[in-house]
Length: 478
Image (cartoon, rainbow, N blue to C red; front, top):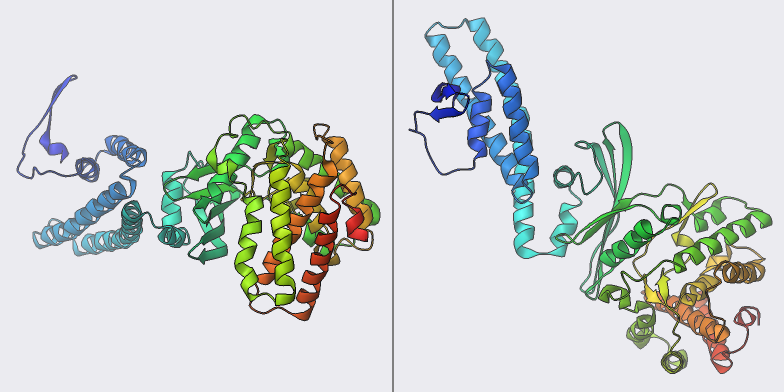
């Protein structure tokens, strides 16, 4: 396609001549040719460039292929230009100085275009392969690759809330695992969008065919869109891409509560203020309207109770003296839950602990909703009462902090049913303890301190099961 081959008849009619190079190809080939051959008409060239780029970016399925064709055609034309320069020099149409000057410019342009061509080729091959194989392992690899991520972000600007093509991309990978039952990938993408520095988190998390990243997106999207306080308690959930099974959300600036307790000497009063803030925000989470997600199968997974079954897999390598006792505790706990169907339901975090609470000054946000589900809100409360200890970072006033947290939470969440309150909390504290034992048993080798802790927790759980109606905080102290 060349301007010389376009015959203008009138405002409404144009015709093309010289069809000797006609072929079946991507329509962008003609657009590129016309653009490159219109070098002496800057106004029309600008309009053609705008049209071509719009066509490339609007084509969702063929994005990388279109870029590939565009850059490939550009390369071909530049190579032809080098041959044309030699011909013009031989015919003495241009001087040696002009020939050398233009040659250097064209060769420099060729180097730049080759870089773009390679990037487009990588993206095209990755997208094609992923489409055919649907392989999570390959997805994890490509989202670790800068060229692919740049291409992906450019293609999904609108979905990711971006204004321009990103610059200065940096990738920090926190988790990268390809187990048979568990696949996990968490990375932070730092880049510049327009004049703003941004950080996004990309997450893939699949456990026993349970897509935890998708579940996390559904929950956080519900909180963000349907509440007035969503922006206060969670990071912005940007989008979930089903094709790649990856969830993107904005990075949360700040430090976790656990790091805050370790690094800073918070006063007794400061800790109480933060504990009250945590209880208030948790109560807000538990009041979210779940009408739109309550019937979703992902949200009915009840993974919290599945920890009881998962622990059995690790008991084989446990010392015999407490293996039977743990199995008996699991059996009794499951029986109590089955016999006492607690009807109160809300959106719960599922892994509510001090590691997943991010403080930035006085502000706090919850992260890591991978274990969220529709279940009894007291599951989060029971888990937090256990996880508050966290190696002693809460200090000597731990019993007081537990009491205050429970009181604050119950005051802020007036919807909590008081019926069977102690029984529910005691059962959920036992489940949290079992979960902790499961983490210890995953170790390759148990230390003496680990064994002593497991034995102590077994003893405490047995006491709770004998009297589930008793004050749940009593068993932490006695």
